[in-house]
Length: 268
Picture 1 (tube, one colour):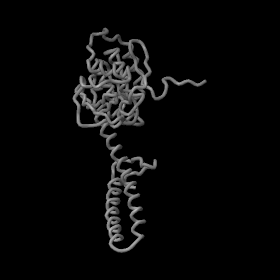
Picture 2 (cartoon, one colour):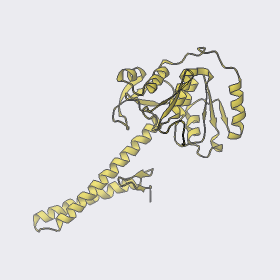
Picture 3 (cartoon, rainbow, N blue to C red):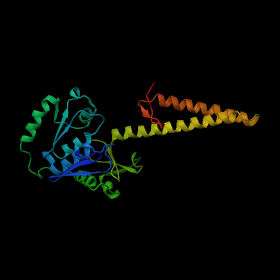
Picture 4 (cartoon, rainbow, N blue to C red):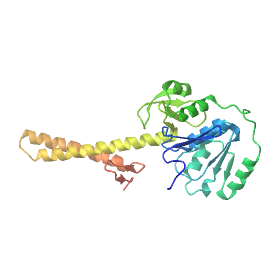
């Protein structure tokens, strides 16, 4: 029998010498999420934690590295020039005060030195209360509005995953947002997610307008007189709307899934 660890689609957390596997809400669209793991380690072990971000796409791990730094830990990032996919290292370097930027060839030696050096005594660095609260929310899978209110201020934005209200978290230097069900986003990820949802909605609108255009074409071929002229005028109007919307979508900045599952690349 083949076994994988950790199980797929689960967050991996650590706490007081234990490993916790939970199916909590996604963070930054990820499950498992490096941010959730890093936060749990930072809260449990404070300045004795070393966080490492390696090659990868998008932003996972950036907020987590900041959590580790706020608890007195050490941040290590692969040199983007050495990374096959530099997005994650670059995001971490833009947003976090990193201690070491290293190529893979040097990382093993430095990590051995770090873990071999006696760390500060437990409790010597205070753990921020907001991180303790977020770690507790992740452990019990769901939060509540009162918990989230302690973390930040409600803003006129909705969670792209569940449609609930979002709170802007007021701690740390990385802009972050959280809903009361537990979904969490950095500002960069929320911006990208909102664009994806907007473009997907526009593709649906385009499909519906195309269907309306086809119906008007069919209706305009039946009958004569003022009624037929009226349908022809509506047809010309919706053709203009279809062309404008299609031009807007095709001149976008990213490839977006269409409702039928295909993709349309910008400018092609």
